Image 1 (cartoon, rainbow, N blue to C red):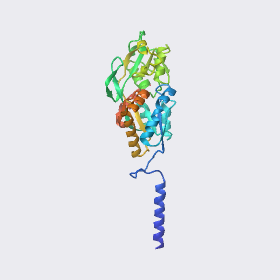
Image 2: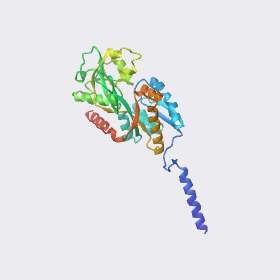
Image 3: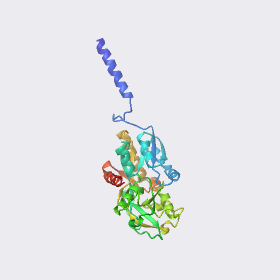
Image 4: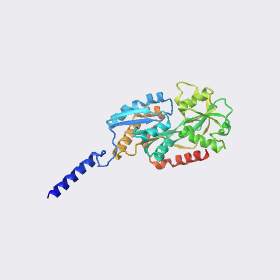
Length: 306
């Protein structure tokens, strides 16, 4: 009888101990449940400007999720991946190559959403249709003799971090298609922010720039004649749209809550205005890892060619 009572006591204490370890969601699933949420963006434009544009998103997310939210901008494309891997960031607005790096190399990110954008016409103007991809484009000054990617050999080209899909990987592949090595056959000018790349062309610091479509809109307030002073010489192949990715150890319940929160924000007029201003996003749709196989192919190709 004593043994039975002792065994029951030990079993009960074991259950209490296991229940105290970690956190359980409403459906009994164990995993990370944020008491406050940290959201981070990559610096696709001037970090201070981007942070100011993203700040209003905090209030909208807090209303949707009923917890405190902190929005910030990483110092570069790699920092946000490292922050998610170390558990310092819960949600990352990751461009395709940064997402693949975080998912494959660090096991630090799980995609839950993909941005929607308007397509682009040959002259760079937007189409009326929303798509789940975007393009990178090469621009030069309007009076430049450069007319094609083939003409970029030996030229100074404004580029982004090597993990930037639109600012490096896809443009590098386009150069390779013309037999131009992006590491040795051009003079790469590595900048932080696509707005800086556009400005470099306007100021004569670069012969050309590789930017996301159409990053010239980011600087149009400061340079009203940017569209007249530059021209588009080429577009790349399609790039899967940016992701909203979360820590993989997060409970399914919280992944779904965050997913729905961003969908709701993208459908509201106030929210759409904010996300359009940040990244030219027009809303969000559910996504999965398989959508980014083309990103892995491009990354392997550029890496192999290097």
